[in-house]
Structure formats: C-alpha cells, structure tokens
Length: 437
Image 1: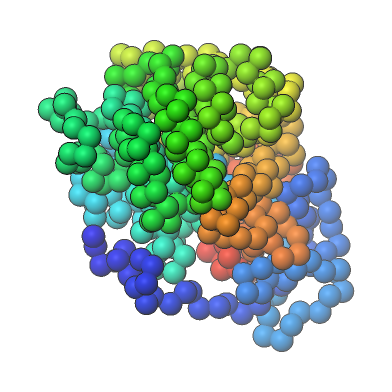
Image 2: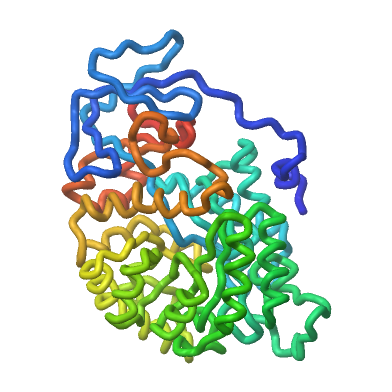
C-alpha cells in the first residue's frame, strides 16, 4: 500500500481537514432538494461544514467571506447511489493485472473528477474503497463522500467472479484468489462463508453490504436469468448485516432473483430491469428500495461481445418498463449510474440524469439525485459515516452544494456539462471550484 494512502487509514494520526472560515452566499435562486420551484430572498451561511438559512437581511458573522451568486440557481450536491470508486476509470484488463497501488492512484484521480462533475456523495457498491474514503475524509485526497460496501459478495461462477479458470477448483477455507486479495470481490459458497465475508467488510468500515443475487452484464460467464445464492444463504448474510444495524442491497435483474432477495429480508434491490408487475407491486407494498440506472442505449456501455452483449441488450430492453412500473407503483427509486472500466465513460455521469426525462420532470429528477438518494444513504443508520442531512438545503444539513449557470429545473442537460455549467462546487463547507469571485 502506498504511503500516500496509508496516512488516511483509521488510527494513522492524520488530522481532519482544518476548519474553514464561515462563508455567506447571497443573491441566488434556491432549489432545496425537496420542492418543485425555486425560491429567492434568502441567504445561506456555511459554518463548520453545515448549512444555516436566513432572510435577505441576515448579517454575516465576523470574518465570513461573502459570495454573490449573481441570481444563479443554488442546489444540493448530487448523489450517485451506484458507483464503483476503484474501478470506474481503469479498464478491466488493466485492473486484473494492476497492483493495489496503481488502482488506488487511478481511483484517487477519478474521485477528484467525480467531485468536479458535481457529485459530492457516492455509494460505492463493489471495491476496496476504504483507504481512499479515509484519505478523502482526512483531506489527503479530493473526492466525494463515500458510503463503502467493500467487495461485492458473490458465489463461485457468479457475477463478478472473473477469475481465470486456472484458479478452480476452489476449496472452502483454501487460499483466496488474486481478485479477492485486491478487494474487488469476495467469494462465498455457503451460509457460514457468507457470514464471514459480511463480517470482514464491517471490520473495515462498510456502511452497507452488496450481495450478488444473479448474473450480470460485465460477467460473460453469467446470464441474467440465473440465481446465485440460495435464500438461506442470502438470509444468513442479511441477518449478519442486521446485527450491525444496517442493510444489504442485492444485485438482481429478473423477478425470481428479486423475490428471493426480498424473502431473505433485503431492503434494497440493485438494477431490477427485468422485473414484472407483480414483483413491482410486492416491492412497493413492502417499502423496498429500488436503486437503478437509466440504461437506454448501447452508448451507455463500453462495447461488449458474446454473452455480455446479450445481457446488455436485455437490460436496455427492460429499462422503459422498469421505470414505468416504478412510477405506477410508487416504488422508492434511487438514481445511480454503475459506470465501469473507462475514464471516458465516467464523463457521462451527469448525462445519465438526462435519460430520466423520458419518465420524469426535471424537478423529480433533481429530487431523486439529491434528497431521495440522501434518504437511501441514511438507511445505514448507526453505520452511516456521515450522520446528518444529505441532499437538501436546510438548517443543519451538510454543506454540499452547487451553484449552476442556468436553471436545471428548466434544462437538466446543464448537469451533463459540469465544466461550463457549475460555477461553484462545495463539499463539507470547502469550496473546490469557484468562478463567481
């Protein structure tokens, strides 16, 4: 492990970032993350990483820096509920051969780019992001808040198991593969093993757990209809997760996989593109979260061949029906992108928001990517690494915000062009970009 990241580990003695002087923002139109309209006539005080709203005549505290927003729109920072911090920008071929130091270096650079796209929080759903999270929190690296899951937990031959065939047969309790050593995946083939893998992630600081219930697009040896863990195995993992007073989310596309996950006690489903109406109704009736992605064309993915291409076409083909069902049954729906293995593709993170205009109005999209996703982050309860209000502009909320050149309530595509559209980016009260003063 490189020294640049070792300093960010718990207990390393690295101090938290120094507190910044108070900042007062004035002359803006407010989108607070919850409403559907803009509001003027308010001032915003940022102090000790938190927000305080006041009237237009509110005086600034001594030593505060005042920034005039020039009538622009001010909104909460964006949240991506399905991101892979460590694997977003490096090709899978390179990842399979890279050292953990090289992976960390790539991820550190991409984390800063993620923040500069306006995403101030991400939920990491597979990868060894713990050290980078600590470095960001301590001020040794720039990037979004990270809600880490650790490696996604899968079965032998399940989604994410990209081991060479020379690594099999696998013996329970035997040596782990290189992929497992780097923290990309954790393989479990029994209830006892899955409990062990869950507990290992909490030892490292996981805020929630990611379980693989079926096949996936980027795993060419899987099909989307297959199931991996049995209900008993999923239940063992979810019970171990609930023992830590947080939740597990399950990777699942078709209804049989989703239903098995719900029967085992899952509180969140990832993807869901192949679900049927009866399953959608069951999710809504039980208050189960849907964390999904608007994959609408092959442009939303790297070029794929073989079974992976077949899987991708199935996902794209199910996207429209999925969002129709989610809306009709009022399923709690989170926004994520699940972009992997390409620095060029990661630049589409904000563009993915624009795909949602097929089903939602801009205000609904903005709420989904701010306050709604903030509610999902809070599902981790006492394991929440950032307890407090996320995704909203209100008293006491975390000071994560954007000032936009133009109104995303009128033109959501502004968020697909962050270099031109974002005049100010703040996270935790620290300004990372400011073209206003």
